[in-house]
Length: 236
Image (cartoon, rainbow, N blue to C red; front, side, top):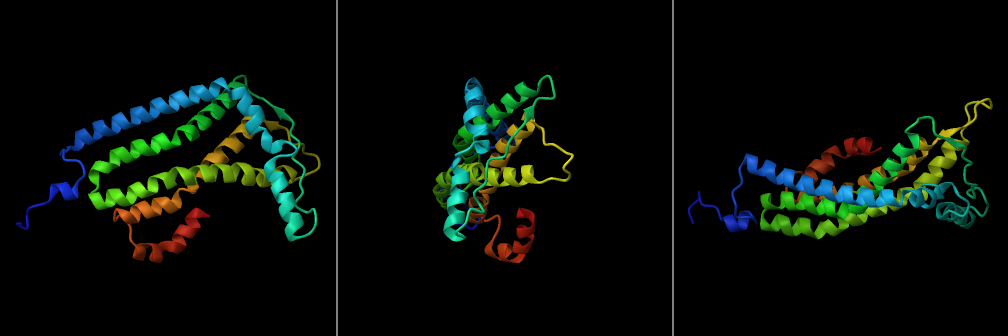
């Protein structure tokens, strides 16, 4: 084989040679599909938003929540006392805007819809990137696609059951002055629970993201060794 010849079947999994605008059209089509599925899951979540608010959003502030029981049992096992047996923080909530409760309901539905549709979003992004990879890169990345969704949901559950109880207990028990009373808005409560869970789920994607980037050759082990200190600061 001549040096200037390329085994197209080996180099690219997709035989079509796409131009710049073809890639834009493909990206637009994938984003439209993602928008549709998020719209469907968001509307579905909005139908049950009152149940989601009572059973999901407000659960970390209720007696008997799993996170509180976990820390209590862990404290008794490790320290042999009730130091980690916290009582759920008492909330006095209010809505200070005309649209406050509706915006909070929409926020719950949108974040819930995105979480439910996350595996589909990952698949659409993968189908967009796949034609640009060779067969070896495709095999490497495909093995991690299931792990992507698994880590995301693990991060969401970790934040919801463990981080939210710890953070709310600390923040609501912190007092700058005895003259100040915590009267929390409903927007603050819904935003804190939903976006902490969502953000932690995305942070849990870092290991598989690093694996994918190294698999397709965008970063190397030498790069990771050289800049790990900077990465630790950014993650913190």
